[in-house]
Amino acid sequence: MAVRNRLAGVRPTRSRVWRALGVCAALALSGAAASGCRVSDEDLQRWERTENGPDKLAAVLLHDKYDMRLRVEAAMSLIRMKPRKGRQVGLEVLVENVLSNPSLPPETRNAIVAELVPLVIEQLKMPPPTTQAGQAAPPDESFKFTDAAYRLLTFERTALVADAGLKDEMKQALTRWAMADFERRLNDRSQAYGMEQLLRYIGSDSVVDLPSLMSKDTKALQLKKMADIVAKIGSKATREEAGKKLVEIAQYIAADAWRSDPQIVAKVKADNERGGYEVNEKQFGVQLAMFQEETLIGVLGSMKQVGGSAVVDFCLQLASDPKPPEKWRQVALDALQQNLDKENPKHAERLLAIAASDAPGIVLDQAFARLREFKRSAMIDKLYELFKTDKWKVRRSAAVSALQVSKAGDLDEFMRKLATAEKNFALDEPIKYGAYLGDLRTDDATPAKWGGPRQAIEAYLTKGSIQARLTALGYLYSYGTQADLPKIQALFGDKEKIPKCDEAAACQWMCAVPKKDDPKQNEDRAITTLGEFAELCVAPKMVQNRPPEADDKDKDKKAPAPPAPTPSASAAPAPSASAAPP
Image (cartoon, rainbow, N blue to C red; front, side):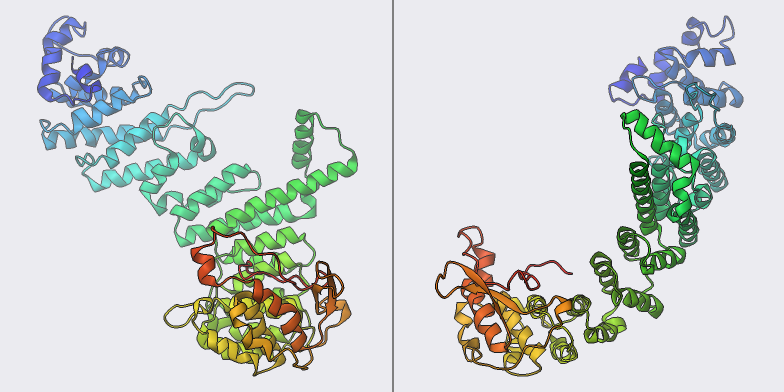
């Protein structure tokens, strides 16, 4: 039989279908009609449920003896047919064996499609099934017609819907269908083609109305999916509208009143009951706060996807406000990633204001990370201004950010600007800066740690400000080896004073060095001069360092060397050359 050929992977031709059915004879034997080989609507509906029904319906479509109305109704029967063993056999036959059959004249195909498409559209307009309280939702029969519409529009072997007007009408109908019951239809697994796949095909026009469906009552996972679809498919204007809606939702969640919302309170209580948890009033308050943070972070994640001016303004405001929890501020700045207007100086200024504030470290880190997204020329002077602060951790982040956007040609400028770092210059600073100097690249993209501007960096061992000279030593702390010791031995007696550090700033200069009477034990030694830093902190580390080439080529062959004397734990910790950006 033709159906067996099809299931075996052989596409039935028109002649195979005719032979299988014996045309009128087979139809008559099937009980379609007692005489005249007539086929009725009842026959078509019955064939939707019979084993050989797909082939019989195909025969009606392919034979020009049947009137157009009956042929189109046969096509609808193929679409309505229930899946068989997980396959949409009826739809496969309609598209692959009938409408794309070479034996079907193009004008006949166009005539069938011209009458079939409006019928499919009418089915897409049907209202979603309603759910009675306490009952399972009835099946949504419209999925059969969305699947059919998608196949008709996207079939590649033959252009099935040749009329541009019909194409547009079907796309518009699919869009209206998706928006009519978006949340439920998005997650329904009975559809052969997912809603996102369908919307992607239609394009940006398909999600214009999606932001209007976003509200404070939208489930978190649905809101996330909506934002994801808008971010991937929507136009700039649609993304902007979605951003405005997300801001409204985030403002509602971030408000103190959110924790007293009856729906929120009821949900947390229900979760406790399901989990068998008994909590007191204080613990319940903590749960509400945790749930609030979790919910807000989810919305901020969606904001990061869609971007837009409303999102940027909200996130900058939230990050600038010292009152919210630091986690909120941190995630708000993370949501700005690649969403800031790099041509807008106000954005850079607001980030710099956060960076120069008393914000927690994780907030400062994110502020500087966003600043590094701007062009160097747009923010380097603002970073250099932060060198003058007496908050050494802020200066450290600003200096590292400056180095990360600089090249070897900017070395002298950086070293000159370090001279303005007069207040509370911490031990961690020159070591950290030195590590990042190793990533400075020359025009041929060779970093300093592999050669590059190494000589230019080492020249600052004996020139420039005390901050620049200490930073040059910090470079050798990370990248110098025993072979480089002669370069700094002459500095061991250098009496130039280390910049003063206020006790309250917690930036004392101390290194852990071996005790004179028991070299196996370390003791803290205060560092007051450049020479002491070179001799007691840098030189021992250089002895233990391996050349970068050896680390790269032979890193797995040798056991690591024992640790060298390092800055004391009572001072700021010294990072390795591979330390992550601040």
